[in-house]
Length: 454
Image (tube, rainbow, N blue to C red):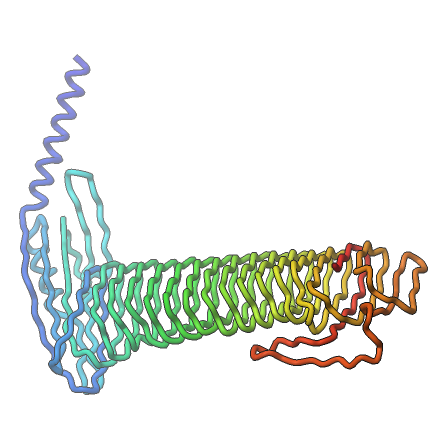
């Protein structure tokens, strides 16, 4: 008997809710509002839109057209009428120099949904009136001339935009964007958005938790956090990055600072970066300057590589021209050094598979370091060493003088066999500024650790 009562009660509740759902959708209206605004050739256009999808089109008239397509459902016809009235009464500022349109009719929206039964939306209109809706769809179509200064504020919606040649600023919040070539886009500000665009201009970018894909752009000055930025071709890049994923496949140069960011970079002329706990993978670089902690750094080839403040990193490269660093607790692996090493080290590891025989200089000053260098060919060089508690292995054909081996030391001056102390050293630079010499110079001062030169 109890089961029958329970089943009967459940059927009554379900019937009541279904009845309410039918009542909640008693009134429905769809329509279109069309407005047009005359402007002159110097008028700046500003458009603010919230919670409504936006499609932008172009034409050759000196005017701006705004179409609003709506579909509304409500329990009370009055709520639909009030909403349409708010859609009709746009906030518009129209002067000789500025056309500013605000379409955001809702200042607050609260939605309560019972799945499969009803959808109750309590919305506060821009005039302060409250309406109850069960469903609404609002889409705007904005048609404007192609060459005007244009600023767009967009929230909680989709944006579709064609190629646009006028100066452009975008301020986006939770927007999905598909756009063409925005070649004069000067400013992109965005949060919680997904953006795919054909082109940007020389652009200031300030993004938060946003994904951006761009084919080409000019100069990039970017501040970003928790974002992904991917561009095929870009000019000079200046970054302030935090926990991002950045992909610059073809660029002129990169400069700035980053924390917890992953990079993938193409060939560059120059780089100047301050990294903290980052992963950087890049191709060739003519001149690179780094400050870094706790980072992984991989390059193909670097011309001049300066690392004046290096702490607990891992650095790999195929070929380096000139390398200088002040470093602690870092592992360096280079396949080849062609010109110079200037290494001030504390508890680092440096491995070089090949040092060119016509290298310019090798200077090492360190403690507790592990150093392994292989000089290929038949090099000629002068050498000065000052070791204490250092396990060392040097080429067997060196001629040493002024040797001091007291108190766990090995202090000596020397040269390769066949070289005279009076032989003239000639230094030259290649077309990338890498110094080479007919006779090299090695100066090593090391405390503890190991040193191997072959």
